[in-house]
Image 1 (tube, rainbow, N blue to C red):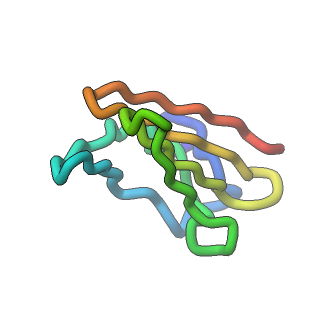
Image 2 (image 1 turned 90 degrees about the horizontal axis):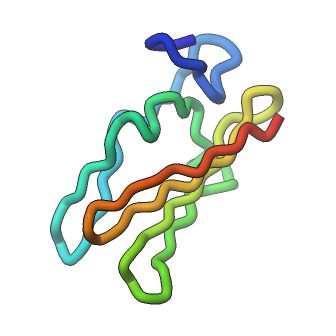
Length: 95
């Protein structure tokens, strides 16, 4: 537990934490609410599985997909951010 929440990806004290997340539409910064990523530790965005980013067909939403940790604490997360402020997270522990 970290900050009273289950810490996904952290089997021990985590070394890597997502400090901030922002999306940009037409050059405008749109911050992501910390609640959507504050329990995701040890992201694999640099370990080969990567971070995948794509737009919806109508270019009104952007999807960011990542995997975190490995083994018991691993997870798969997709963040969705809409041009007009809509945001959502789809999260699945993979253990």
